[in-house]
Length: 210
Ligand SMILES: [Cu+2]
Image (cartoon, rainbow, N blue to C red):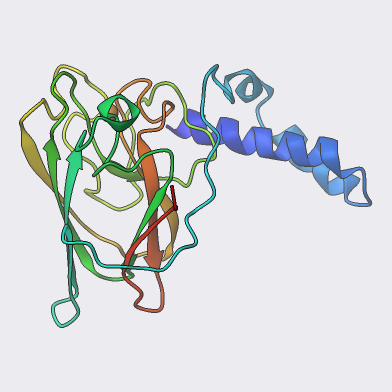
């Protein structure tokens, strides 16, 4: 995953340098030179999906999300392949960034992750806020310690159909992230949603109108 991030940063820097043409050229040159040139070709694997804009709708609290403000805990009941949408490659029916889960900073989050896809294994974890996803993840490290399901990249060992597991972590850093599957090709094909950690106590789910 580190390679993926470096590649994405490299691309962003390159795009900025190309599109800029302004008085920041010295800075851009310096930054571009610092990025490893080898990263560029791997930046945009064929078929990767561009990020959908984060949903701007009202925040609601679905039955699958429970927040205890006194205990500072959030429980999420998330099913991979809950609907047939996107070839079952979805979380509670959401995919390609068409939902945002927001939890308050400092809360302990427990995800009960169940795989309803009849045929394929899936995984879940909190990752960087990608704009495009790599085809494969190598030893992915979640944003928060523990925030990833077991054997997340291995189709034979990740969460199998009808199985479930629990992912527990503390959302100790506010920001915008993604919740995605790490099986090769899945996130790239849309198996991801937004995951925000709020610094102001906000909690809930927003979805894009469809
Ligand atoms: Cu998957």
